[in-house]
Image (tube, rainbow over all chains, first blue to last red; front, side, top):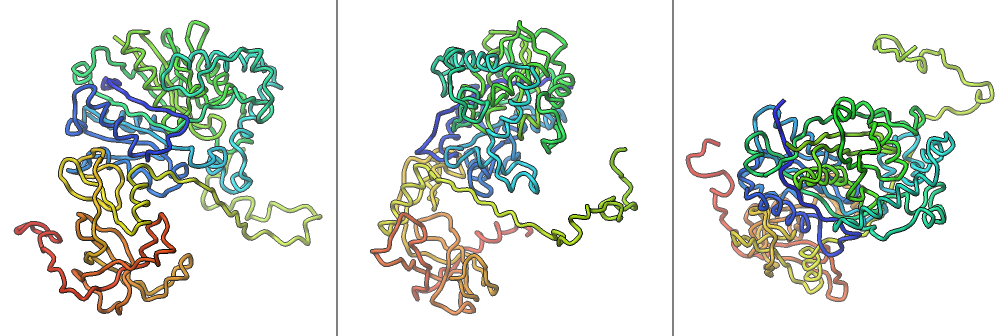
Length: 350
Length: 194
């Protein structure tokens, strides 16, 4: 395997970005991340992005954003209708071929223009489930109800996750839900989608993230302490909710094993866990113990930009390694209802 | 038991092995279902396109200027597609231009009953813009439309103007002499083996 590292990233998340289009607010990130390490698009061998037409409400919406990547003269470029973490995965695979040394990855969405809870119904199984337009929070409430009735987790434990995420988010300038709230206060919240309370659900945001991957010596040239990708794996659970156990995540467990999460201590984990319930499930599936700090950024309960949140998890974990806050981290990205798909990435400093 | 993976064996559902309960004997089989889908969005077009739409209400066509090359792009997107830079300057371009390319459509489109075939959709380049965009050309027989033909915008009546590109109903010939298009623009540089 070729050594590949995250060498720079830049993100922006706000509750809603009203007066800028996606490309207008992404260009400063796409350029800024390159400028931060002194490279230009001419140094970039591959550009890959993740976004969603269903969220943008426009066909081929990603084409507008490619304008921001200096596409003249023509560049090698690709797009995934997935979180930007999958764009990173595509770039990582391409870099393994040895064909290129530097890749620009970005993911973004401006979900405030539509009702994301409804838009997400379009990702459900199209014949029996999607036509019912199930609400995304209600779909997760099914898992939450099963978790609580199975005795695996209590409402109080979920409130602890929510309260701790708020405390962590208060230290993150990009987070949008940053006010502290005690476990008792969260326990007192009226359910939004029973048993999920407002603090259990993701803190929806508009925004995006741009990130640079570099291979081998190029990574060392560009960054004092690159965050090396030591393992990366992506697994998918069944699409139909009725055929899998919603209280656990087989895809996250297998991806975690393949990526080598348990091979050494994990200093911190940035988990794509839109709901408190998702965090509980992922922590268990990945075998993360008490000595691992979970979501030091506040996670998606602090700010959740669809299509970028997974990439932001990798960026947050990498930035902490580059800063010297720890040596080994796990970042995950997710997609689909009830953590249907999971990508697990293990990052290490030297 | 697992799934039958042999393509030569019919699935149970088609083999007659699956039978319905007697209570469904007289019920008509479902042949198809319709599952209509619709999602409402509030579009926030961004700074540049918002300015363009406000301009349209005053019968002005605004374009972005590339800060590196000076090229003008209509409709504006807030970023130059050639340099990748955010644009900061806008200019008004003319509501007169020329046909760079066109197509005659002879079949009706269900969602646009207002378009009576045959009609002409053309790539119209307004004077002052470096790029064209798709537009309807009317007021002329489709057979007479040609590349290089000069056209002008036909606007909605002033009291019907909105913040919308639909303010231009269509473009029609001005009668000026045709533009002789630089062959180089279309087929590449001399000597290119195309």
